[in-house]
Length: 533
Image (cartoon, rainbow, N blue to C red; front, side, top):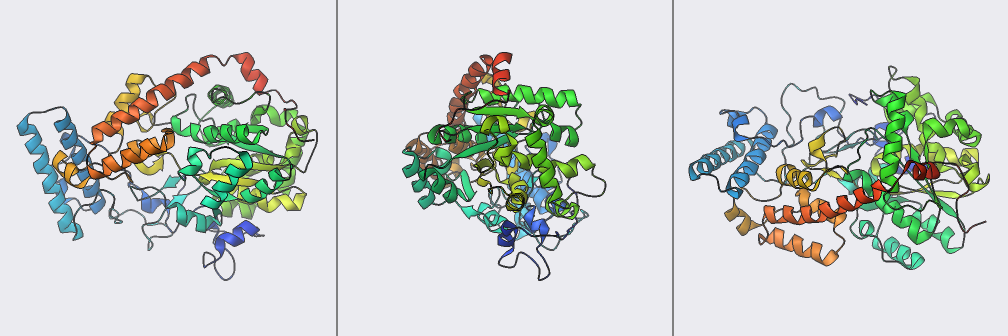
């Protein structure tokens, strides 16, 4: 969905989550700023346009680029030229070629200092934009982030400021006390995603633990929007964590495949969208979910066969106004009515009565939703509606975003093959993509890197290791070695390749075992195995 300048609307009613999000000045005296509730952190998407770092060959850098009108263009050119210098040295290019590239790099850095009044720093992109770009609603405010269910943008090479996002969204930080409580309740070591702050925010997780400790039931709900046949490693994050939650809490799980959403937002036929849902389901099943405890459903299939699901969709639709969904999601008068009504469909699985075959018509079972933080607007709306239709509010666990290979400014994209490591990639493709496209936090020369060390906060290879390398001690040693300069960028990338290649190969082997009969078993509505009555 193209997100241009967003209009602000006041809702007819304000949820308790919304009220929490607007405390401390986020809202005006006569009502909350609903752009904040949809994830606007001071800055419109247009003010962030062009902030992604792009790798370019020296031949692609115009001779006069050091005279660019935009400091951001200079910053991007320096980053690209630095990558070129490192690449030339790594492949032992001719001395004249290396010297020429280094000379260009130094010239760009001098031009940057002249323009900005300070030295170039790899982890500090300038806030300036190229002249002539429309400034949108918030042109006077700079340096902040934009997050909604369709768009994630930041000007920082470190990625989104998640502490600020917690304040704006009105959620709670997952702190050590909560992690320790999860460990006590489950008797299991917390997942690395919890230990490392990848799942960093929550709503009502303590309430879920209260219920669990008192032998009261809950179930898990997560989902996938099937926009392409092949998934990438970033798509695995919620499923890896959800699988762990299912195992340690021994609870049932429902997984929604929003093929209807992708038909409404993308240029897909209904048949394509549904086909992608089935193919993506195979990758999800390959994560190791228990068929006796997991129900995967396509919206296009399940809506017509479950009166309970559709009844809840209608209840939700009745309690959310058109004005509210415009305020929450930024819909405009030109959006089709399918988009406007879709949030109720994503909300409905939060209620156990949407699955009468699974939960035997029970309406009182609370739901826990692991998801990326960009999905939170859907569930703030859901939590507002829940008590008004007689259901418990869903609880949530929020994850950070998985960065693109080119840097943490955006999420990975299934539409850009070079921004992602796909689950269909060969070992050779993985190695090539990491070596060629993974943004480096290393210095411009080996000498500088040995002296000053690399920056793990912006280095994509290190970021990926925080997601996939299980050994905490080894990860910390890599951080120390890279930050001190003892480890070079090429060596760090080699470690990542050695972690990713077997991970993807093992996933591919498991997926080959997922037959059409297995998919049918997971996607057939039925009573799941669980201990509660």
